Length: 127
Image (tube, rainbow, N blue to C red; front, side, top):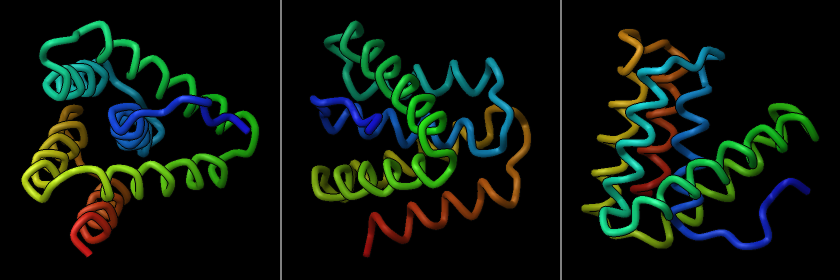
């Protein structure tokens, strides 16, 4: 299994953001920059921890995809969504939705699939 042995809520949040960034099949520099900026906001006192979390999540996403394709990524996505949902308060959940919107909008277009993923996350976080 591609899941790292030690995972924090920040790692799961990073994984969700990586999934959002990669969802349309095209990763742009602007999306990467926004993702890194948003994760840094969650760890303002420890920029190295934020950087390592993004790197871990990116590697985790790639390993999952290589091992089992989109189904493996979806399994890890569901795991991370449940972790985040159970670990943060409603105000943080709203901030996460704002972060996701910024990532989806970073390349100048929000696809139907990205909107669907956003809606799925929003509905799950607040159910």
